Image 1 (spheres, helix red, strand yellow):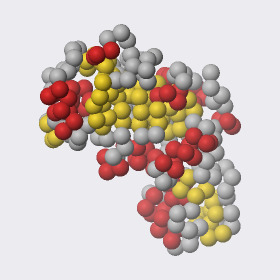
Image 2 (image 1 turned 90 degrees about the horizontal axis):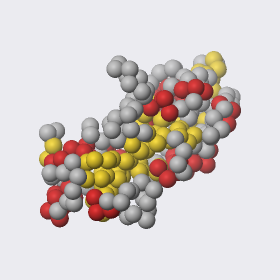
Image 3 (image 1 turned 60 degrees about the vertical axis):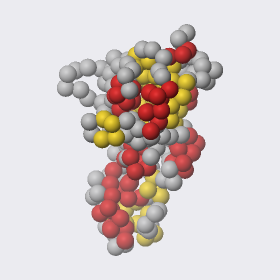
Image 4 (image 1 turned 90 degrees about the vertical axis):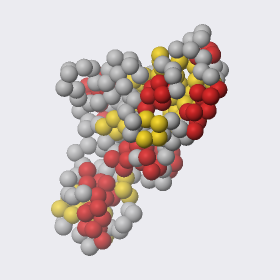
Length: 260
């Protein structure tokens, strides 16, 4: 079981405007304006645009009043099982993604990054870092997400070519996808005996049930769907655990990959 006591959660630097916004001072854009007007100090010195602070270590003041966060930034990888929803609350009273976590982690104000439907499994990130969530999910950043799927039958080459070119869904044509027969040595713990039915598909969009609908559009049913990666995050990082609280080094590397 991972060590999840709050004192063990990595203390990493975040953008000052994000810190101020999380503390309820104003929106991130308005906080940048406050910084530009010299209304913010860090450790007694005037703050500057682009500055980073470490919550709980750096002393941030707004108009001479100390600004504190109610909780530190936290980043948790989840291997979502079948049967739970990716949201943190559900009006139908279905089990949510938070049910995977122990009580001491459920108290954080967490948001799911990269939702999966109830029948799908695999990688989901839970965090309270809005900047990182935005970078991972907004289409303009084109962050690749790779899925391992098991089909109802072996697909034809024309079907695969259609997916690679993009297919028409009701809200418009999808971007080009990368599709390949799954490497059973790479995913040997996830793939069953029907090797010819397992494929990987990589997309950077995030439409509702997009992968399933793309395969349906070319005539195939997805029987199993597992998300194995989102950008630099991988299911392999969990090493078989249900969840993983990212370490300071893991968070630093993740943020560097997005220039955060």
